[in-house]
Length: 214
Image 1: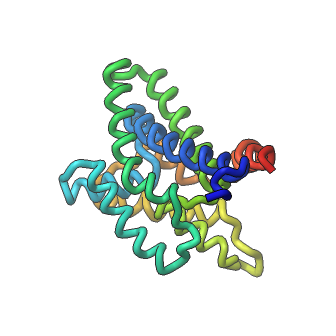
Image 2 (image 1 turned 60 degrees about the horizontal axis):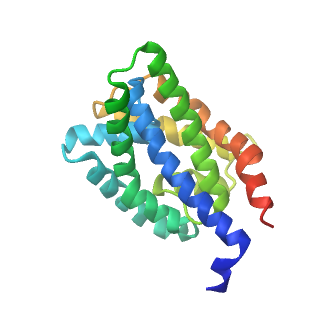
């Protein structure tokens, strides 16, 4: 219990909570931008076409199934952030989408672009925060992290996390498309650039934040 009271642990917990909440808000922004959701949400939307139930509930089921796989692959990535993501992120996304719709109505093209850019930036900052907090990540995020930790090699060189993330994002986008979710420009941008942007925000925001508590 004493460990929970240390400045470092307190900051890690705050970073983890903030990261997960921002992740939910970013999904709501993506949805209101109408330019396509991020790759994992594209997969979820595709499955939602086949299983027409409440999105928040379906999101929780998909993550629970993936969580079982992560438990056997590398349970190091399971923590408080994992369960916040599992039980709350889908509902935070729905709340954010509804609130934005109520406040702004149907956005104009500049509004759509603003929502898209905000969604991309927030989703990458969110991932950087809870990755660095190291108190668990979402079941989906754990997969590219686990693969990158194994240091796979291509043409004799180790494949970095950003490249692994691009591959997993492209796979999710393709599967979502095959199940009826039409990817948009936002989906393509996040599939290609989310990995590098997460790495950038870890170096510039989340890692320095954590070091201040040491």
